[in-house]
Amino acid sequence: MVLIGFLFPSVLPGAFVIICISSAAACLLVPLFSFQPGRRQLLMIPLLLGATLLVLLRTVHIRNSACFPFKESLVCSVRGTLCEDSRISSSNNQVMQVRMNQCTASDGTVGSASGVIAAVGGPSLLLNAGTEIEVSGRLIAGLDGRFFKATAWQVMNPPRRWDFLRVWISDWAINRLGMNEPSSSVPIMLIFGRVTPGAAKIREMAQNAGCLHVLALSGLHLEFFMSFSRFAFFFSRRRISVRILSLVLSIAFVMVVGPMSSLLRAVIFVSVSLCDSLINIGFSKMEKLTLTAILQIAIFPDSILGIKVVYSYVATAGVLLVGRYLSAYLVRIMPEKLAGSIGHGAGAVLATGLVSIRLDGVWHPLSILMTPIASKTVFLMMSVGFARLAFPSAYILKLAEKLLYEWLCDIFRFQYSAGGIAFAVFFLIMLTVCLLIKYSLEKARRKARKDELEFQLRFACGNQGSSGEELPGDVQEIRTEFSD
Image (tube, rainbow, N blue to C red):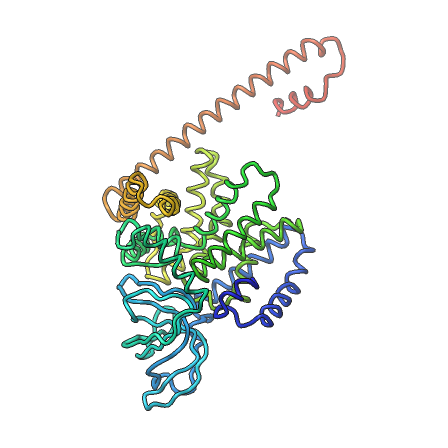
């Protein structure tokens, strides 16, 4: 954390504040260690649900914390530094998160401003975190609070020396993938968080299909870090080594890609997992997620910039809470891997129902069937993107990336087509058939077990019951079971 704060001072308010917040968080979390796991779970769930409800009711918004020395209607320009790399929205507008330090009124009055606000518009080229910029325009209200509609802009100071190195590395990697190719736009978004027009189209399709949580970068980065660490330490028997490598890899990503909220969440989650392994507390995944949310809000408040971050947290909580129980029931009628994918996808879709309605006014229950396929496809695209960084000219990797991109588009379009409805009906029929087959096999197994027990009962009675000897305890239990 201290290393990230040193490299990215715009993310953290200062070392003293970090120490104070960390100490306060530790004092609040230490009493939780003395509770049993079940009681800790009961304490964690209300905290997460309460935070979700607060955000859904729009009572907690970092963007609305922007303060101006005069009326908002008089503000005509703001000046500050970018908290994170800018991105392109689905309407081809530049979106920048500006930490303000100065503002100007329409009559020329200059005053100091504080807080973070989103500026929409801006230059066509993507800007990087740490860039000092002045944006002219006006304040308007939006879904996630107030934002600044930019009509003119000017880059005042470029990023610092470290940011130059980071920008050079990220630009070099993006150029190797090919930023103008639509199929490469999704891996660029998944790895580096830069939403180009091609990736914005995919995000819009995912939102219309009710599968936006599939593209949640925080979950993808975290899953990749953990999978890569397990692969690298496949022959290692020490779980702590795996956690340490995950932490080192996630911090390295923050240094190269920038302080995105998804990467910060991954760093905190891996840090909590490492502390859990060292202290041997035994936190569940749900408890780790809740602690991650609390620490991210406390230490990195600017990284919680909108409802989409909460969308990712709620989707993960749905996987851990609802998906686990659904998978336990589905395992009885289908293979374990398939049951886990469907159960986790259903948990994410059900948990994000309110957030989906909050985002676009529509909820899509049919996306429960699409989520497992889409999530595996997205993770494969991220893996192919990493492989293309090493071998950018490999024909097989380019072909795989193109096929996965087309397949992902077909999955999201499948939602409203006749084929999607036919697939849902076919899936329900196959699920019913699997249930009947599973029930028949279970019934045959119970009948065979009953016949075997009856044979053992008769055999035991024939050998010992006729001689007047007392029957063994297990035979007496068998006789009692069948007599009932």
